[in-house]
Amino acid sequence: MIVFSFLLNGVKRIPVWVWLFLVGVCIFCTSTVAVSMDLGAYMNYALNILKGKGYVDMSGHPVFIRAPLFPLMIAVSFRMLGISVSSAFWIVRFFAILNPLLIYFLGKKIGGKWLGVTAAFLALSSYSLNFWSYRHLDAVWPSFVLISLIVLYSAFEASRLSYFILSGMFMGLAYLVKQAALIFFPLPVLLLLFIRTYRNRKNIRGVLLYLLFISAFVLPWVHYVYFHTSNWKFALLGRGGGFAADAFLHLNLFTVFERYLHGLVMYYSGGDQSLVYNFSLAPLFLLSWAFVLFKGIGKRDKDVLILTVIFLLISPYLSFVGNNNLRVGQLVIFILLSYLVAAYFIVEMIGRLCQKLHFPTKMYTSLNMIVLIIGIIFQCFFSYKGDKGDRAFLKQSVFIGRFLPGEISQEILGLYGEKFATRKVAKWICGNLSPEEKIMIDWPAYARPVYFYTEGSYRVYNMPIHGELFDIYGGWNKVRSNLILLSAGAYLRCDPRNRFYYLTEGDLLRVLKEYKIKYILISPERFYLLPYFEKNPSFIKVTEMGKEGPVIFRVKAVHPLKKFQTIVTRYAFEFLKCLKNNPQRYEYLKKELFLGALGWKEEQFDQFIKISSQQEFR
Image 1: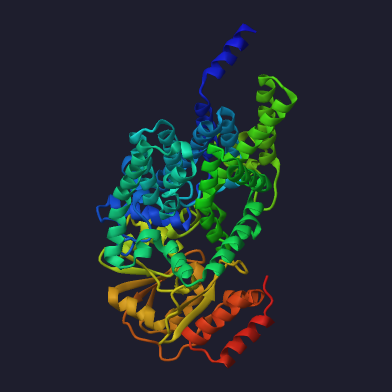
Image 2: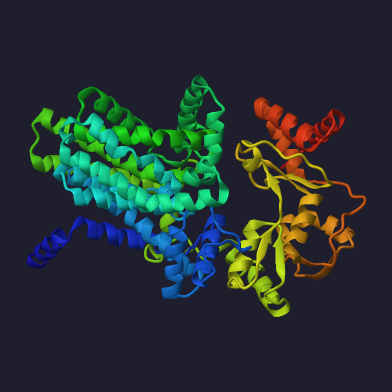
C-alpha cells in the first residue's frame, strides 16, 4: 500500500505536459510513413537548399508558391540525420506531437487546467486530426500560430512589450511556413478594439511592435516574390490565395456574402471533406462554437471574446475550403481550436451544473474526468464515414499497435516505396545519363521521387499539362496547335475538386526546345500518352521497365506529328457525365474550355456528350 501511494504521488508530480508529450510520442511514432505529393516537393526544395542550389525546384527555377521555412527545416534535418524520407518525416512528426501540448497551454491560460487537459486529450484521440497531422505541412504552421496566441495572451495580460515582440516573431514564422497565417495578423488590433481592459498605452505600443516584427519577417519574402512576379496578390497570399483574391475582386458584395455563408455550410456538412464526414464530434464543435459566439457577443466575456474574434478571422478561410471542397486537413488549426472550444463548453457546463447543485470541488474534478474518458473512448471506437475511430490510427503505432488485434501496419511510402520503380528509375538515370542531360516526366507525383533518389543531380521538368485549377480565375489560353491529350482526374471522379486537363503539341515541343530536354519519361499512371510518342519519329524509345515501371524516350528532334487523333481518356468522359449534376460549371466549361480555348464546334462537343452518356463507369 505504501509503495502504491508512493508511485501515485510520483505520478501526480509529473507535469501534465510531460504526459501529453509521452502520449504523443507513442501515437505518432508510427510504422507507416505517408509521403504526399506536397511533402515530396518540399523534400526536393530542401535537397536543393542542402546542395547549395538555393530555394529552387527540380528544374532549377526559383520557388515562389510557398515561403521557405518548412523546406529549410527539412534541409537542417537532412544535414543532421542524412538524406532520407524518414529524416524529412521527423519534422512533420515533431509538430504533430507539439500541437496538443500547445492546445493544453492555450486552454490552461483561457479557462484553467481542466480546459487545457480536456482539449489536448480529445485532440490526441481524434483519428482524423491525427491522420491529417501526418499529411503535407498542415500541422506545421498551426504550431507557430498557437505559440503566437499563447504569448499574445500573456502580453495583453501582463502588458509586456517583449511578449508582443515574441508573438509577432512567431506569427511571422507561421507565415513563412504557409501564407494562410496572414488571417491571424489583425488579431491584437481587434482585441484592443473589443476588450476595454486591454486598452492602455503600453498595450497599444506592444501591438505596434507586434506588427513591426511581423513585417520584418514577412516583407523580405513578399518583396522577393513581387520583384520576380510583379503580382502583389501572389506575393502576399501565395498561389491559392492569389487565385481566390482574383475571384473575390470580380464579385459584388451580395455574392461575396452569399458565397461566404454557403462555404461555411459546405465546410461543416458539404461532402467527403466536411467536418461532419470526418469528425464524429462535429455536432459538438458546432454547438460549442455557437455557445461561444452567443456568449461572446452577449456577455462580453474577455476570454470568450478572444475565441469569437479568432473565429471571425478564420471563417473566410473555412468558407473558401468549403466552397472548393478542399481537403479537411487544410484547417488543422481550426480543428485544434474546435477541440479547445468543445472543451470550454464541456468544462463550462459541468461548472454550472456543480454550482447549481452545490457539488464539492472533488465532484467537479471527477465529472470532468468521467466526461473526458467517455470522449476518448467514443473517438477511439466509434467509426463514422471518414472518421475510422482512433484505434485505426493507433494500429500504426510502433508502441501501441502490437497490443491491438490484427496485423501491425507496415511502412507505406507511396511512390517512394520499394514496390514502385522510382528507385530503379533513379538508378538507371544515374548509370546511363550525364548530369547535363535534362529529363521531362509526365506526372509530378512520379517526377518528385525520381528527382529525390537521384539526389538532385539532374534537372527534371514537368510535362506542360494545363489544368482547370490554374486557369479558372484567369481565363483559358487559346489552343493554337494539335491537342495531344484531354483527360481528368483518375481517382476524383465526381468530386468537385476534379478538373479537366489537356496537353497541346505546341506547348510540349516549345518546352522541349526551350530547355533542351534530352529524355522523356512516361509513367505507368499515364501510359495512355504512349501512342503519341511511339508514332512521332522525333522520339526514340530507349527502355521500358515492365508493368510497374516507366517507358523512357530520347528526344531526337523537335518536330510536330502531321496527323494524330487526340487521346481522350475515359476519365474525361466520366467527369463530363458527372458535370450534368452541376449545370453552372458545366456551362462554364463548355463555353470557356471546349468552345473557347480548345476551339471545338458545337457538333464536336455534342459528340463528346453523346459518347460520355453512353459509357458505363465502375
